[in-house]
Image (cartoon, rainbow, N blue to C red):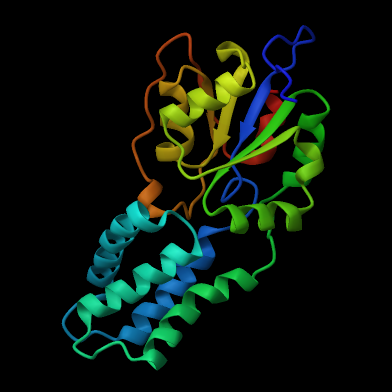
Amino acid sequence: MIVSMGMASNGAQTLLIDADDTLWENNIYFERAIARFISFLNHHEYSAEQVREILNDVERENIVTHGYGLHSFAHALVGCFERLSADPVTPQLHATIQSFAHAIADHPVEFLPDVPETLDYLSSRHHLILMTKGAFAEQSGKVERSGLKPYFEAVEIVPEKDEAVYRSIIAKYELSNDTTWMIGNSPKSDINPALSAGINAVFVPHGATWILEHDEVAEPIPPSRLITVESFVKLREHF
């Protein structure tokens, strides 16, 4: 049964909270894998920066067909190698390249500072919904391993975060726009589409946010509100 969270009379808000690079580290592991891949490629014509730009392009193309997550990332690494290397991708090379991606799966969940304590505080005062995008098995696995699930009244794993998805979540839980907030580190996925859907947002910048999630933070159109906090624990000052 889906319970309406939009009509709380005790001052409780509904906080939709992103996971990767908001609750725990994620992109730093991909950055390390990319650095190993670029070193392995050792291209003699293209600089590391140029290889990275080409990889970004391949990743954008892969998202359309493979979505997000390690499977898509591994495809992108192989695709980038094929685009830049004069050598054919042998089965051995293919396995080596994919190993850069699959090594990421072995990392334990590494919380950002003060996350469990802050969730404990927030969950006692507000309605919390974990809202993350990506491959379902990967994201649900991280949620389970994190041990943070008890703080949330619901978990939503979506293939994309755009205005339409936010509107569907608002409708599903019968959320009130003025008391609903999306909290996350990505302007592209967390902040701008949430504001476009008519709810509020809290931007929690992360120094290693994935380049494909970069965007200018939109100006909220009243009555929507936007708050920026320097760290997750600072949410306690607002909620």
